Length: 297
Image 1 (cartoon, rainbow, N blue to C red):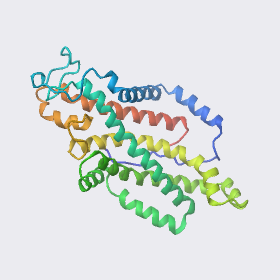
Image 2: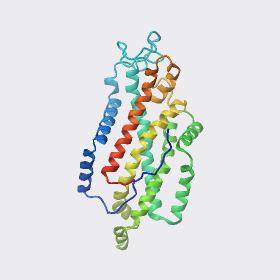
Image 3: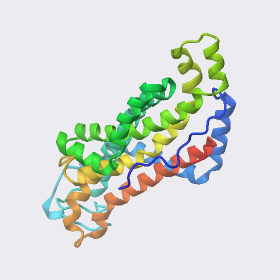
Image 4: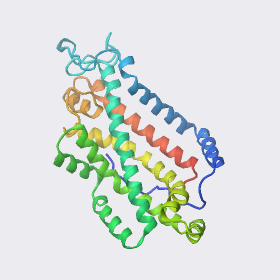
């Protein structure tokens, strides 16, 4: 599990609101990046697998059979083996994608909305408001993301909702910092000064001239946090601070299978492989989007 960083972050804004031609160019450049397109297809496949899990899973993910426990990969009727309670691993991996994706995506997008509001307002209005707001954000930003997530989940108690709340709080500070940095640069642009001189109010300037330039870079950075969110959520479940049995979730599956690693190591490793493939796909997709938007790290 890695801490949230803001090193390779888009901050260079040199033109006003993007035109449709710009986005067409972004799509063209993205299509030329075969690695990013491949990662996007993997992400799309995992999302579809999670959405249609009830229809494609071969068995009930909670049905156990002690007679079939820890069956190896390739067992007839159990293509990916069975877990410590005899439950079909393929079905549990398919259904586990739902909660794992939910815990990876939802906290980031809630943090994207809240952090953008905080950062854009602080960057645009500046002065004491900026100082007070960003120093408050820095209090949370000073803690490593892993430790902060564990501390918040431990204080709030185990459960999906508390894990969701903890992860959202973890990701608001870095997104707010990026939003404030980009907005501060946009605020000094000539077209913003011209709009202010023409009598446009702060709300109009932010809506027409600021958001169109800052939301794209902030969104690209937020997508890079999805993989971190998935890993943190899986870590919380592994530590018993997230999902509770028998709900299938990749981190929880790693926890329950850890005692079987010497008996069926390949079966025990499957949830970790799923987490790795999904996380790296989101990272590669985010890198492709950043390159397509001509955002320099």
